Amino acid sequence: MQQKCIFLDRDGVLNRERGDYTYTLEDFEILPGVPEALALLKQNGYLLIVVTNQGGVAKGLYTKTDVMACHQKLQEGCGNLIDAIYYAPSHPDFSESLSRKPDSLMLERAISRYSIDPSRSWMVGDSKRDLEAAEKVGVRSVIVGDKYAPGSYTWQLHDLWEAAQVILGGGLKSTV
Image 1: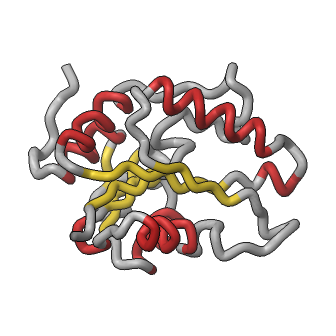
Image 2 (image 1 turned 180 degrees about the vertical axis):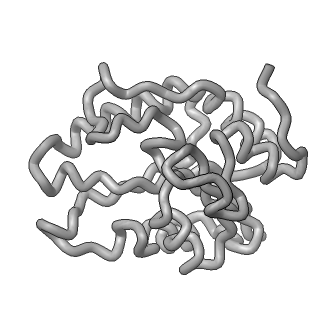
């Protein structure tokens, strides 16, 4: 039987978006409500898979080791609930890659490896390219954060906690 999944962008969804690359442990800050939202989604039978562009690797700003250290901090801070983390170390100025969103290869690999049913799955992102990657593989999506003007997207929510409520059909409820 195919599984249902929540695909998650990293920067701006799981950790604070700094407007610059986030690659040091000191700068890597898990957003409020993220561990609770992940636990709620996991309790409801969803796989949790991170798909993140990390173009700073191709630019030489940081290393794959830096990325892995941040992902370890993310796992530890979220109770090791994340099933897999895919990242694209390429950047169009330095190296082409179908993995990098808005392309969908990271999602396609996860769908194949984990036998995921796209029609029962969601992407939670904070940028248009996250939604475009999801659309290419038939996964519904929501956008979180404040990068876009209110009303720009049908499911435009404050954060991952609100997204979890919508995905689970509970509407919008406060974390308080």
